Length: 329
Image 1: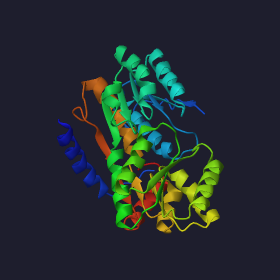
Image 2: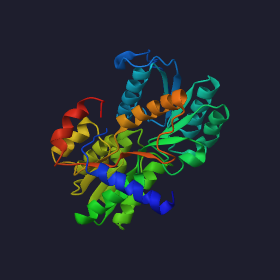
Image 3: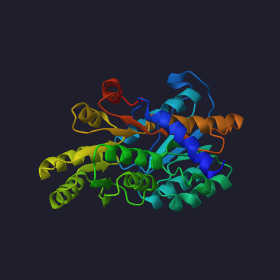
Image 4: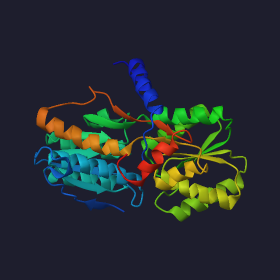
């Protein structure tokens, strides 16, 4: 597929997603060791799959990723070994550890693809299939992953920027909470395509108080900021505190959802969210590895499988809000 045809196909799929009512939502290792059958009553494959992410501890977004992955593991009798570290070098080590332990498959995020390429290649050299999800849509094939599940972050950012421009936004602050993340950078770059007066600010997403302080200072310094774009629901909640402290009249939008952010949309404190369905990402990443190991299936035909973007706003929040109370969306 040529670049133009591929872009068109992505736009068509994502345009459908935008109209949908889906919702999202230091290193550590977790081993749910999901037993065969489990809640799904399905296959008893006996496979062991490692899921390695760049999760920052405390970010509720990842609870939905893990919930989806754990359900798929239960369905197919898979032992799921989850580990995470926001430091790229340490995430690469976690992938290497999974390879050394001879897992059957690896599902990984590629927020920093260059730093993870060698570890991914080690898995492929060991004939271990690798699926990427959540981050790295433009780089996953080059890195060596076979399939990808996630949102088109370029389109997501552009869609958000277009909507802000249509609402009259001119001076947008885009908040990046993790340095070097290709997905976050793509979102802000997309917003800037819609609103030329977009500037980025880097904050420490692992420290909520530091995020609040940084944003409060920026809003106090520049009262002309009329829109704030946060790239994760916990950061949106920090932004609300900063806006209140700075007396800012800016409007807030965010990527992703949790229960508090969804309630803030209901309460008209957040204009809208751009969602990517993290539960689906986790579920499909594990399912794709299972099907590849069992049947040699390749989902996506060499292209990414899109789980977003979609808008969550005042028009659909009443439907979506109840789902944010659990981790199944």
